[in-house]
Amino acid sequence: MSMLDTAAANRSAIGEFLAALDRAADDLGYEYVAEMVDIPVNDLRMKLDGDKDLTLAEANRIAIVTGVNLQLSLAEAVPA
Image (cartoon, rainbow, N blue to C red; front, side, top):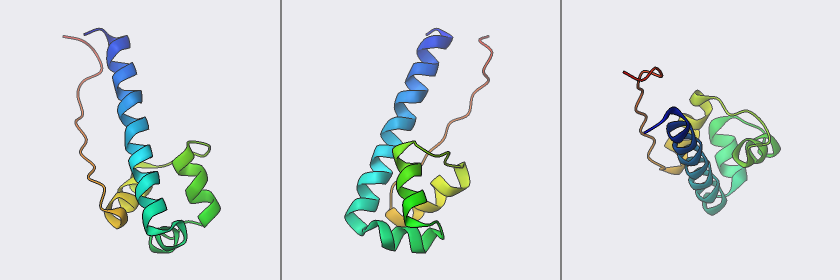
């Protein structure tokens, strides 16, 4: 697998994760989730849409509140 394939797969996985968080927040109510993670509702929506940066800590808090499972696997960026 080339580095470009890996980068594309990572972008796809992040997009799917954000979509899962967005669906879960929509199901629970954006207002509820925003209050639980202490992020203004409009900012939460923009972060989940990708219009604003979302930190890993924020993503983790949202995942905990919404029940979305977040698993990260870190690997060295330089091919062996």
